[in-house]
Length: 298
Image (cartoon, rainbow, N blue to C red):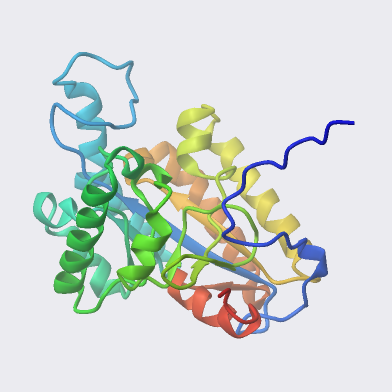
């Protein structure tokens, strides 16, 4: 009988069913860690990729460009005010082009004590389409700009459009990154093997992502928030056995008033959980998990 071929794999982690792992807790004793990810993105006018609220038009596509720009002129400020209402920390997945095009945003994040995560230069491009030399140069330039602006090197990375080349983990490890958010393979942080040293993969769930649900699937905001609450409640049950990570991904250009009102209901529900959850920044979650991940892969 002819043997069937083994499927191609990446070799970056071993199979590990979550039910086989131990039951440690997050720093406040909670089973569920929660983080809020603000996707703060910039797009050039008249070229490149970008999400389309309106059917795509020939460039310059003023309608869709204006929708994205609204997020950095209005949406981000409404979101930060809402987070302030609940004293919630955030992690900002920041395109470095934001420093030049929207210079008021980064100081506001800094004043709140939010973490800045590397997110490329602009979300109008994808790493897998760059080629190895251009990708390496982009990561180096982004890292240098973030370090200069924030006074410390970034620790985490998410690729524009959550996109990688086959060499991205090596490039990130070589550039000094500690964790990456592109690998959505687990509900706990896990080690990723690279040829330049290990990285931690931090969970970033797509099923509850606002752009996937509100924009892609066209869910009504109230239905989306019901799903967020159901996800949180069920993960709280699951987290009695293993510590888990829940992420809330928010794009400012989606955060119009009719979506913020039901989102406020989710934050009220989150606040009501008290010490059953640990709300933290991405880097804090990675740091707390490190003693429990076992030795990093060689």
